[in-house]
Amino acid sequence: MKLADEMMVGTSNILQTCEQPAELTQEDFEDLFGEPSGTFFHECQKLIESLDFRYDILKGPFREEVFLRVLNTLHQDLEVAGKHRKQRWEDGWGENLSQFRSTGYDLAALAPKFVRLQEIIRLRGEYVRPYCDQFESNFVKVLRQWMFKKWFHSIDHIYEFGCGTGHNLIDAAVLFPDRPLYGLDWSQASQVILRLMKEYHGFNIVGREFDMLDPDASFALNPQSGVFTVGAMEQLGNQYHAFLNYILAQRPQVCVHVETLYELYDQSDLFDYVAAKYLEKRKYLRGMLGTLQALEKEGHLQILGTIRTFGSLYHDGYSVVIWKPL
Ligand SMILES: C[S@@+](CC[C@H](N)C(=O)[O-])C[C@H]1O[C@@H](n2cnc3c(N)ncnc32)[C@H](O)[C@@H]1O
Image (cartoon, rainbow, N blue to C red; front, side, top):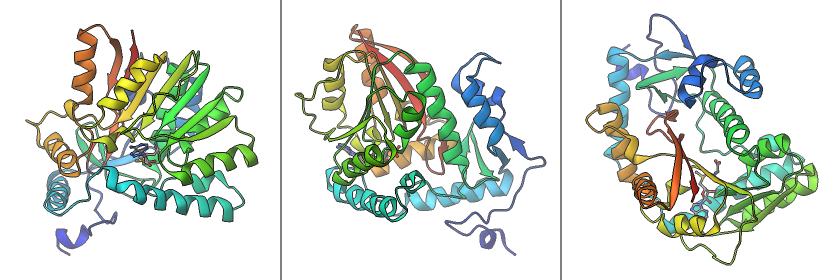
């Protein structure tokens, strides 16, 4: 069978190609998150031990086939981010809401459908094929535990902007049952889901309508607050200034953005070049890290860390920047 036949677009039918299967260990995660060896949180260690992080690195012609697939995608008409997509999110979260209801409020129904199972992953400069079809979600589970344990341990109120189904907040609710959680989104379905989460699971959680493109300055964050976003600022393209200014004015203790960060891509490298082009094509977040760095130079904020972890096929959607207003 020809290589092109093996490589069916949208499926995982890519041959396994490396000599030895690789696996992300605790040390690898510590390295990716910039933590000293042997110091990872117990909760993260337990997750790493219990989940399957094995993968094959795609090499030679198999790597080239992935590049070809990515380049072919870049030549297609792709839907761009922006205000016009609001209804798409409403419809998507509406589907999760229906499923949440029909499953008797099973939290598993809140997994976003945009996380594609059995897909190629970008990891440390390589395209890799995970053994487990939940690799992406499992990695995000570790990332979330790390984020909450490391950056939100002494925070009184936790806010996620662009929270979607609120599935990221479930871990926060379990880790910090007494702390008020807030899920903000411009989707009505999101707010209904969060209300049902509170009603049927007893979470200390509130959903509220909020448009990051047109932030409501009258919505005040509580003292000792922490803010995070996951793949939500991505949708703002280069229109992130109003939201950043809103957060700066609210003076939370810490902000953690798990987002694709255009400025981290080294465009002299093909692997990064195609990711940067994907962001340009879809009009995803661009410029935010540069703006944060400029604001830091002017003394408005302090960047506490910038981390590149991994990504799905087209870009590194799970890079992290942590900062706090000064
Ligand atoms: C990729 S999803 C991420 C959702 C969630 N953070 C997660 O990790 O599953 C992007 C989210 O941002 C929300 N969003 C996009 N633009 C927004 C805006 N201008 N204001 C508020 N929410 C927005 C969408 O409704 C959606 O819930």
